[in-house]
Image (cartoon, rainbow, N blue to C red; front, side):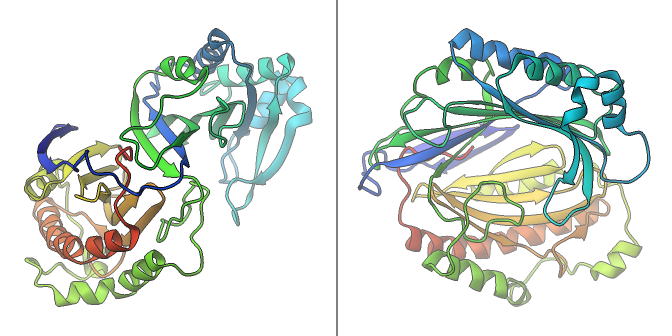
Length: 394
């Protein structure tokens, strides 16, 4: 049976797995469910936090809050932390500096560990109310936790709200995590336990849902991934990913690509533009190959579902202002993510250029993806085995 799938304006038809076939029959497993939600930047950050607190209160669930309000990592300029302490002296005990990422310079920040104290909650809400005008924090991250979100059946949930500055203005993100126990042969995951459903309903409909079997490996996951799983030193999957990563440039040289792109150094010096809308070329090239297309800020994700119920995705990062394309090819299952970067013009990044150059890039990408679909995907699926019917990756 074929399934018609519509996403972000793209329509494709893909093969649907046989739902009567049992997959990976075995012992139950804990599944981490991660959901992303639309976060309206027009809603004041403080109002968003109050809405989340009200969701926990309405569901009758206790919750803890933790937050970080940080200055820019670039020295100079206004210190929102200093301004916040002057306005809210009770924030002074939480003043400090720490790297936002490992190996990065220390950044001044106000950091409050998990607390249920009302004065601390009131402080966090007051700081959020000042964003972005009176308290222009570079990054504000607030987490809500109820129970243990990593333990299935406990009704635990973790929700994170983020407001940050980037070259295109303020960005907003909202996500939730919880864990359920799934039978390997089940056709669907059980509903969120306990009060989880009531809290999640208050967040609206998720725009993206991802599932991971806890304890699974993620061979070839992109650097900086925040999923909290690391691949072991050697498994059949990691060996396959390592081999393809090491040989992807040689593989591309063997292929007959339809267009000879300028050397990247030449392209960077002679970049032309603008390319106009980028999505049509991707849709025209990949919809006939069974891929749907989702567009986000600075990124397109083209996906298809395999007969083994895995998800194959081409993630095309087109930047938000740099007009540089960076493609990644990924095969995902419930307990692994196998990723191979695609060096479009001999390196990981390549200038998009004008419409003619962008269409040439996409045409070359389609040939490379065809080869990975023919070789890499079957090898990964053979090593991983079919995914359970409940597995989904939006």
